[in-house]
Every structure is written in C-alpha cells, then in structure tokens.
Amino acid sequence: MAERAKTPTLEQYEAMVTIRAFETEAERQYKAAKIGGYCHLSSGQEATTVGTMAAMTPSDLLVTGYRCHGFALARGVPASEAMAELFGRRSGCAGGRGGSMHLLDPERGFYGGWGIVAGQLPVATGLALALTRRGREDAVLCELGDGAVNMGAWHESLNLAALWELPIVYLVVNNVYGMGTSVSRASAEPDLFKRAASYRMASERVDGDDIEAVFDATDRLLGAAREQRKPAVLEAMTYRYRGHSVADAGTAYRTKDEIAERRGRDPITRVRATLAERGAEEAELEGAEQRARDTVAAAVEFADADAEPALDRLAAGMYAPTSDLQFARMKPGSPYGEDELVYAAGLGA
Image (cartoon, rainbow, N blue to C red):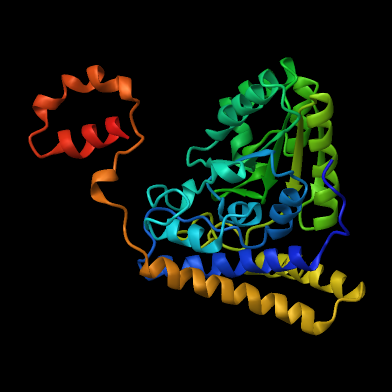
C-alpha cells in the first residue's frame, strides 16, 4: 500500500487550495472568452480528489471523466500546463488540442479525462487487463460521476473486471447531481456502491469531504487490487458548488439554502481546522494559501503568453500510418488543402 502519511498534511492542504483557486480562475477565464468548449468545475470536491491521489503510487494508472482539472493537478500535472491546455495552447499537457475535458499526462500515469459519459470505463478496464498480462503489481483508479453508473459501459466493465479479477478501483464521485437531475430521481438504487454486489465485487461508501476517510478507503482498496487482483467500487459522497458546467448557473434544480448548507461543511475549511488542531501555525497555513494563489496566477500568465498549436499539427496522431489506403479514396474530394492539413499531418505523425 502507499506509505501512510499523517493525512491531512500541509502539502495536501496546499493542493486542495490550489485546486479551488484553479477552478475559480478557470471560470473567470472562461467568461473572459480565453477558454473555449465546455468547462466543468470541481469546487467543493477537493478532499475526494486529493485524498484518492495521495493513495496512488507513481506507477499506478489514473483515468477520469471530464471533471478532471483537480485530478490532473493532484496527480502532479503542473498548473501552468493544465491552464495552458484549457487555453488551447502549445505547452498544454495535451498539446493544446484536448481542452478542459481532455487533460492527460501519460508520463505521470494519467491516461486522460474523457468527455463521453462512462466512455472512460472500458479504457480503464483495458488498462487493468494490460497490467495483469504484463505481470505488473500496479492498479488502475477509474473516476466517474454518479450519472455514469446508469450507462451500459458501467455494467460491461464491472462484469469483466470481476470475471477476470482485474486490478482496478472504480471511484464513483457522487456529487448529488448528474447534470441537473438528482441521484434519487435518476437511479432506482441511489446507494450506488451497492450495485457492485451484482458482480460479487467489494464496495463501500465514504464521506468524500473527509480527506482522512477517503485516503484510508482508497489506500486499502488499491492495495487489495495490486496485491490480490480484487477489483472494487468506492463511492465518495461530496458536492459541487458550481453548476454542471460553467454554462449552468446550478440554481434551477437546487436552492441557495442547500448550497449554503453544504458550504458550511467545506472540505478545505475542515482540513484547515484539523491541521490547526494538530499544531500547524497560522503562518504555515497562510503561506500554503499564498503559494496556491501565486501558482494559479503564474499559470494564467504562462498560458496567456503561450503560443497556439501549429496548424499543420492539427491532426497529428489521429490516424495510424497504415490508414493511408483507407483514406486515399477521400482525397479527390478534398479541394481546400485537407490532404496536406489533415491526411499528411495525421498519417505522418
């Protein structure tokens, strides 16, 4: 298992504050038209994010859904590279071609945020199979939202993971709402972790705003996945303060009183209080908060000054080299330079 630190640590607190500051700034930059496409924020979910990442080893693999900024940062992706990706810039962690929903960093074992609901589950399950076939004693953590458990890919993936005894933990981040529909209205069994029983798979629910509980559960389940090839489901109960995406005000399906009540149990405030009780000096806590703000401010400055991806690299990596024959018949109907821009760049990369 991962080495047991006295969770929470000052470093974990700084990571949580950095994620919150990053998300706040991402919303500001989105509204300033610096970020395009969709943008899904995770403000309020920091204990789940940092707690689970603390339990992973460097050689474990991570796959997430599209609410992935916090997971990327907690996994070690520099804030400058994450923000540059949101800006669509060349130095972004996905080369500026993925955007908010598709952050990734394979060198850190992060195999991407995925924009299709539940689309990441078969990918993560396949990675777990690859670990088994290669004899690696590592595990996969696959993050998904509560809405994804009603998709077919959820059932197919869990069935195979159980049958083949794959080293994977499916982390269900239950933030109460799938888009604008509450879990209780969308799921006949709202205790989502119980669904794992259909596949005779271990499962449990944890307070996702309690970083210690999150770490302990994740550490234990990932350890069983690595050492005994036992897949599992972990449901983390948390809350998102913002809407489903930046385009969603988040007030049509919930009240201001509900949001205020949840803010009263803010995970960052809880960790700050715990650290203070255990002897952390006020200067240390304020220093962590200032470093977080400085990190995010520098990330925005870096992203804003960075160059856009080269146009001739737009399709690089999209097609395998052997795809040339498949697309050859399409070239005569491409009179506006598509041959050079798309086919040549994509096939030649």
